[in-house]
Length: 257
Image (cartoon, rainbow, N blue to C red; front, side):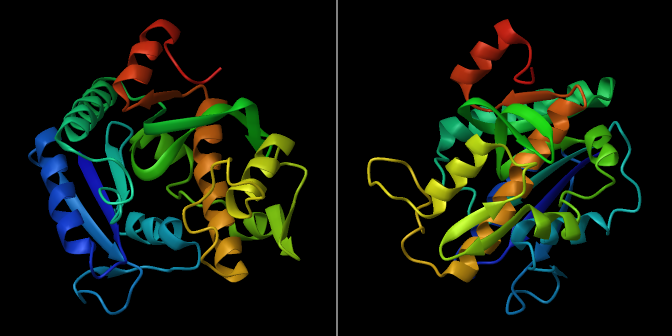
């Protein structure tokens, strides 16, 4: 079974994003099941009402609770309602995403494995979260997880809340991280949310939002990076939806080292 879980939040985006997401799911498996969870109480009351404490991650976890059992042979595609707006998503990109996700889904259905698929990014060297290492991470605006990986995670995407709260605090616009977050990741996240130079990449809202929003954002990012680190630390495979990186993967077999 293929499940699709869409996190709805923005009134301007969610309806068109849901339609496009459902088209993607049906191209992969015509019998796929779409689940909508909303972190915005003003949206359609028919949606599952999520918990916005950890933004999309707590919403996705709420939706996972609605699935009675996930088999190792199943796969779940997660998305938020900005996946086709804040990221490149034309017809060609959609075509490659569909093909990579379908390949990953069918491969896992035939032989269950620990797999994560999506758009990858990385630092110059390995990073670690909660002492789990990875070379790359999968961006969580649109990604696929195999049922076997979800079950290893305990059918929950978020880091345990007590652990997450201990991983980072914010003092005077400076993130203070736990030692289980590698130094290169600490530096990356500080610059990403509090950029000191216009020449370096940063979050597009970095100069617009409050400190309260930034501490929520950094915890969301830690959840994102943790997923890939958990996958790699469990001998899993990360598959990229970018055709150039996919070509690189043919010779390297996996982004997990």
